[in-house]
Image (cartoon, rainbow, N blue to C red):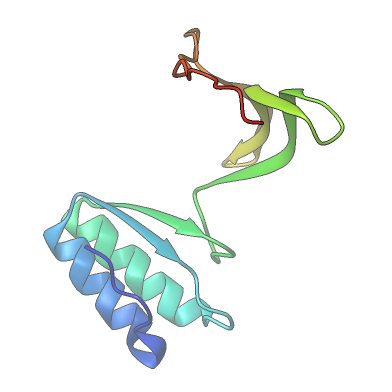
Amino acid sequence: MSIPNPKEHWATVVGAVCDGFSVVLARSPHGLSPTSAARVTALAHRTGAVLVVLGEWPGATARIEVTSVVNHGVGDGHGVLSGRDIHLRASVRGVVKNGVLPWPLDREIETPVRRLRVVS
């Protein structure tokens, strides 16, 4: 389900979605009050939903931040992207850990074979 922009009803809408889904992904609106955030957190907790929020969230239990991205296989304007390393920083209740999420995850990228023809 996608709800493009609930505007001033954001907290109410996300709270209702938490009641119907076990995992909810949402973008935090600019200027969300700590009271509204606490209300949505309480609704998610009560319903057992996992709430993943992109953006600032007062009182978040865990935070994941992308610190850098390294692309592999692409040169100066040429080449094919063959891999990507996403460097992450995660903090859970004050404990901070860094890690790397590689892509692809131990698998080859298959590229389609294209037949070339001579054009004069």
